[in-house]
Amino acid sequence: MSTSEPIGLPDAPELGAHALPAGTYDGKVVFITGGGTGLGRAIATEFARLGASIVVASRKPEHLEQADEAMADLGAPALTVQCDIREPDSVAAAFDAAVAAFGLPDVLINNAAANFPIPAEDMSPNAWRTVVDITLNGTYFCAREFARRHLDANTPGSIVNVGATYAWTGGPGFAHSAAAKAGVKNMVETLAVEWGPYGIQVNGLVPGLMPHEDMTDDIKGNLARTNDKDACQPALRVGRPRELGWAATFLASPYARFISGHTLVVDGANWQRRSLTQPEIVTVRDQMGKGPFEL
Image (cartoon, rainbow, N blue to C red; front, top):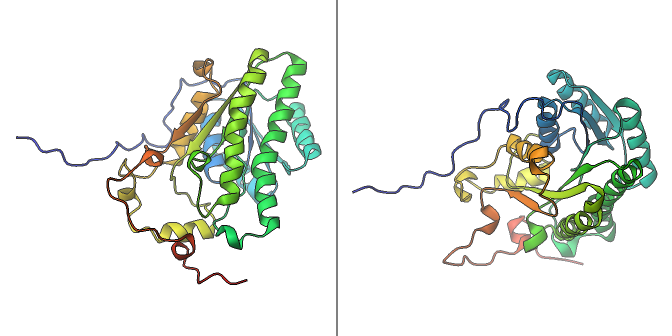
């Protein structure tokens, strides 16, 4: 008699494996916001491995330096450009630089976002505005600039907006980001319909827990309070950043042309997890190790 022991989902292929045929993005230009660190860099890496010329836009010079180094290690044609996606003029200037270097980008990856855990009652109005301005408004400003240029040139293009599962479920401890990401998800669904007739597909891509060295200290601190991260996932493992990169290269590829208005979640089904028994409620303040609220 056989026994079924939990074994989890198989691990990802090694770094350097291709999800698509070699050369899929030869002659293509991919513009990535926030592509110098973390998951953004993982996405940029996979497009570069498939032959794309990479444009990385970031507000922070140190992140652009990291992008330069990563793309140089791959031998990929690359441009890094300083850009504050909250400012439409800065976005337009970044696209001008991309066009001058490589031509009109074929793919836009809206990865840049702002986020930090905080109880909603402790959040300042400025903190709320900043996260929404970067995550929601910045995503729209970049998508708008990309689309207007393609409409003017009468050429097709592909947009992938990086989202979060709490766009569906809400995100206690992340009220600002959850609200902004809900707007990003709706933007995917809306713009896919508006711009589809002009040859522009718009999709979303949502990562699960994919630890990486560039996570902020406050998020690392929250993760440190989870003893065994693998055991907390239905897959019995966390994700690998390269898995998000492979998904992004597929969504923007010729093999996904009839996929538009869809948000793909790459998290091993963790966001759909439900329990037969309900644990006791632990407030966000207690989860974060904060004391009682005081005015």
